Image (cartoon, rainbow over all chains, first blue to last red; front, top):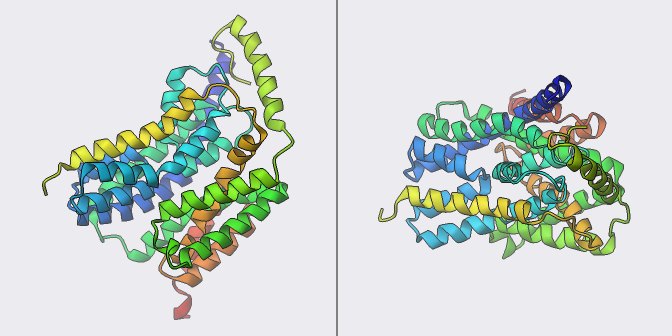
Amino acid sequence: MSETETLNKKKIFLQGVRDGMPICIGYFAVAFSLGIAARNAGISAFQGFLMSLLNNASAGEYALITTIAADAPYLEAVIITLVANARYLLMSTALSQRFSPDTPMVHRLCVSYDITDELFGIAIAREGNVQPLYSYGAFAVAIPGWAFGTAFGILMGNMLPANIVSALSVALYGMFLAIIIPPAKKDKIVGVLVLISFAASYIASRLPVIGGWSEGTRIILLTVVIAGAAAVLFPRKEETGSDMDKVAADRNDRENEASENGSIE
Amino acid sequence: MTHNIYIYILLAGAVSYLLRMIPVTLLKKPIKNVYIRSFLYYVPYVTLAVMTFPAILTATGSVTAGILALVVGIILAWTTGSLPLVAAVCCIVAFAAGYLPML
């Protein structure tokens, strides 16, 4: 392995760490409030830590906590996790399209471990193929933020001033905006979709029946309906994506002959 | 409590992981269908937008703080595109807005 290649790998990893920092802070705040809910359900700090380490999902874990508090059947915990986290199936499918075809299985298994809204968002916002090292850099700070945040929430309960905890929770939404607004500036259809999504989400939360559904269910329903309608009405002709795939495929063909370590730009 | 909390956690963890892992490991070839490609392209923007609004309004317990954080966040994201900056400023705005009624 050449020296520049090592440097490049380090640089990609550190970019992930840098972009993961605000996610870590936002996760810590959200996980902290999640921990308070977990404590009320009788979950210990270690159990909360384990729950967050294994699930990496805010809505899914809230749903799980209510299941545990109700002492419901295990099957119910499985179904509610499936529903609350179904959007990760969509994100994971979207991300699968951006893996270089020769990405080793071990990287696929590891990168998919923490596909969350935010970590998916920053990974897919990058140009070209998925860079596992970038994701690992972000994971290295985001996963501890989420898991320790939950444990601290359980241990410390309401010791932090409420106004600080609530202000920190806005960090997550700030991140969402930073992910969706810049592409909306470049692509008018995305901009209009964002506005429609805001409006539809607000209306759905106020409707008699749908408003009573869990947030996770509403997210799935609105995502499938709005993104589906957009795909039918505005199929993307493009495509920088398929061009990139072609370029990537050509490059991979060449590199397969050369060696396995050739995937850096 | 008749159920074991660890079993709940392990089951949920397994479901969460499989949902993420299966598409990434099984779909190795590019999807050619333009409608599916377009759908997948639009999914994250719609999901994140739906998750942001109206949830941001109630995140702090003050709708005013939520609206201010939303507006400032959109303007900053539009002009700078910087993720850490937008996240930090949104927090500061939400925190500062808590003191508005006192003025």
